[in-house]
Length: 225
Image (cartoon, rainbow, N blue to C red; front, side):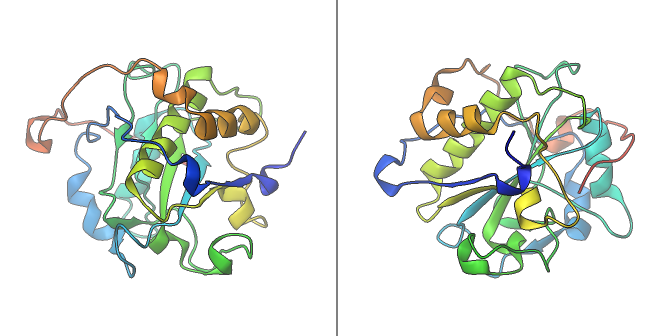
């Protein structure tokens, strides 16, 4: 079985898709935490994006994952959160958690790999982060989680002209991280990203309400950052 530390593929410019829709309402109540868990990008927020990083939370709930954005120190963050199969939102939507124009804190500043963006550090500034809710170890990912994660990547690929790398957190930080783990079907995920079947999966049509209209949600637990 391949190691997550090897999970990485590149996106050919010749196959860049057209617009890919995504049902991505804001996770309730995240906006107040952006000042303490994000940074203004040091690169152009469109042309400077070259990489999507795939993570898994090592926790069982979206609320637990969101709790790391609320920490007063050592906060972490990510752009999208894919719900677990035990959550009501599974099969319906992905949570938007940080504006794409901002750098989310999903990879250590010191982490890098020579295969990815010429080994540049400060990965958060030129990447987008996707967290998939999964306990890790013996917890399987649902087929929908793999499919919708591929759809998010194709959504990004259509939007960002210089997006070239799709890589695991484990490859960028192999001494500290193993996510998304061996149970994430990387080969199927790669096939879906490159060949477009992800575009055909049903996505419920729902407009994202302003944050002021969304109900409060209490965070629990912790995630793998």
